Length: 302
Image 1 (cartoon, rainbow, N blue to C red):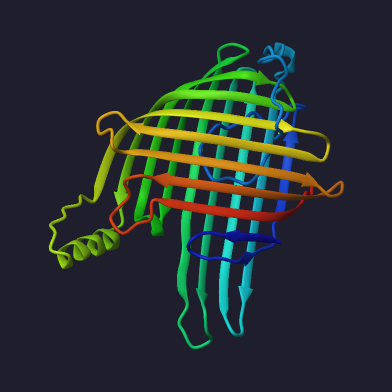
Image 2 (spheres, one colour):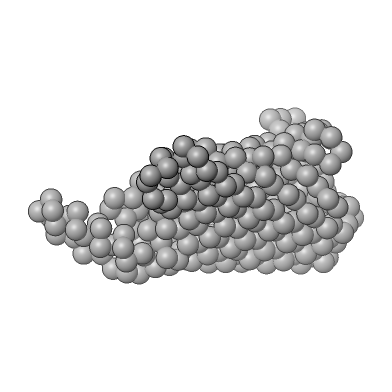
């Protein structure tokens, strides 16, 4: 069972099934992307007496990992709800090269009374692919490409291309602390309905508003991530990303993720995730902040 909440729909319990295939002994190296993704790991104490030294090269083990998650909810009666969510993650590590990919979708429709028509309350699709080259035990270069389509953010497409460097202060099997710094190319294709609604609202208020269908921003990007297997039963993950336009300084975005997973039994775990996305200059009429929380029971088949 899971519970999803945002400013679009307040209560969506769903079932979740997790299927994974893993090769190699090392835990997953952080993907380092600002995405709202399923919980993966964490703890409070990072290191005593400063940052720990990087692991020996022998700790970097090749791995092949695949995870698939899906859930749905359908209810009828005094109110009606239809909701679905799905996600997948893939990681391939061979010596100093790593390839990762992820995709997800979230969709919901609801009606507060039996007589009212169903309305879409959430609809977004996301995907990313990332290549990482480890040039030393602590330093890596990467290129990440991410795409997002979100009806309620007024986006037919948001494409981000992020080259940069990642530095691992701590890179152990059960504990990781790292930071990323680089460039972000953001290209938005806006939803025409959102543009028309914003223009009409401005005209009704006696203002003039001209919005282009597409917009490209050049940003600086900074990210910090923390992942910790506190013990055999509890893992925590946290990440924060800041994007600042270098050409128009009034534009910036902030993304934050926090997740905790607790093992209930050998094959069962309960995971809780919190995600926040803030855009200080969205389309007119679009809220600046989106928040989503989830609580899931996860069953691992393999």
